[in-house]
Image 1 (tube, rainbow, N blue to C red):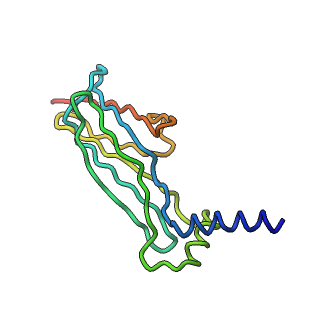
Image 2 (cartoon, helix red, strand yellow; image 1 turned 90 degrees about the vertical axis):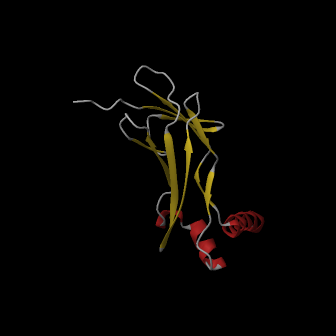
Image 3 (cartoon, rainbow, N blue to C red; image 1 turned 45 degrees about the vertical axis):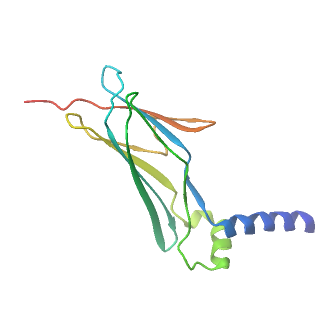
Length: 145
């Protein structure tokens, strides 16, 4: 029993010491038009973040879809605020429910098309694979009056 407790404590302490929280796995997004053709030149802005009880830590980057309509983002991790004590990290590792849920979103735009927003969590346009998330987003042409 002592051995099991020691192994569990060591695993939690190591995770807490490392301190990083996985916010989003690698994410590949395919952007197409209403006919299903890939859309090149779409601006895709990715934002990610996580709540560390009293502080919300975020990051952002952007990319442009290639000729194949695809853009890929690496896995996103967030480190806790600087100066967080070792005990606070251990508490955070044990008590995950007191924090907000780590999440990521992308905002996709292209002139002449309606803006789209996609969240990495609970989004039907995303499929989880062994390699991360794969998303397919259809941009609709703006209506001309």
